Image (cartoon, helix red, strand yellow):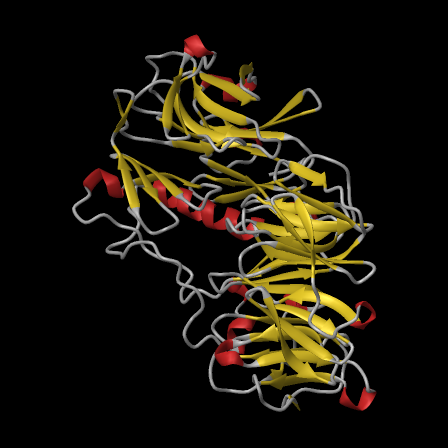
Length: 547
């Protein structure tokens, strides 16, 4: 996901630096979801796939993947439960856990099991829940309440921290219970002679005299499940409520690892052999895919997101398949003038997108609404060139051409930061956030300096404190346009004076004298391979020793 996002951001940044407006005429922002005719052919469109692997924080592959109630993507790994911040996966503070099962809760948290112990939490960490039994599996019901199956096959419900026993279906003994599972819409209780479906506060018999795994409710009431034994019946089966169970046409005799269904009718089935069965959201039946895309190899878990995208947990990391109708959507304000000159773009963690324009700040909210900000604390928000989000969710804005200091928007309130508050940097051109959560303010040393050749002043912000970061060499004598941190921790800067890298207390510079075609470099982005991309009038790749 990271590499695709950086490339898109890089192209958008180059467009804005060239003073090109985004779009011609556009509707409000909506979540397009899957295409009405989404087919297996879409799985072979390489631009629709993006991957998060070791370079993006998924070190040892992923076993589980989920979408949180707030849209956050979570992965269960041998290093613990990781969350995706839009660039990379982050492990919340606390011990390392090998996650067994991963469940998204209705309040935005997630839950998982470690050695039978239930853990609940989120981005700030997880807490082990003290229970009088070991947990085998867990699901949430249609009301969002947590249901638990113990290792002794007893059922419980967890409500507001209070654990209450949950009665099994009438006539079902403890030794008859095999597992408790959910397909994201329906809670299923698998027993030795069939399955029950949770409806309100009751158990409803769904299947008789047949053991199935990975029960999934599709659209129009059709259900799917996997049969393991007897061997001659092994494979994918389907039925409708009150109807007969039958083998799915087009399926093969094989063990099944994953069944994932989408609300629009698409179905993904992963078999132990690695074969993939797929059903389009059309009237066509299920078919086996040939010549699998790289993302569909060694799949451990799969889930369709609410917007129709497909998430995969694989041995290589987490893959995201975008199922939107088109890769681009145009945003434009009719007769907007300066509002249509986009200078900076910030996708916020809550799903909003902030646009820094010559006319102010436009916020495109996740629900499709749009807010427009022309002033804050009495300051005219023209020519906004810097946007960034800190780890606490605060949005920072600045201007490299019109006003000094920076403004922070958090919990509906604005705060101003200037020299008196410790931000001793003026006309701040850009604000960047590094992987550790620090903010880097790329500004000028004098309040009156607006020239590209005015001395630079770089200030960092971390855990509520500002600190200057001194520059050396050609970068110190002119405006600094961009910052990036390499995968090895090295710090890269670019601007009027070329490119500079700071690592292990020393500097190295690239200028026109050392091979740069143009002296001013406007954009930097570090790629997962450890190289750095720089944008001037062309695209340049730099390594440790050459340009």
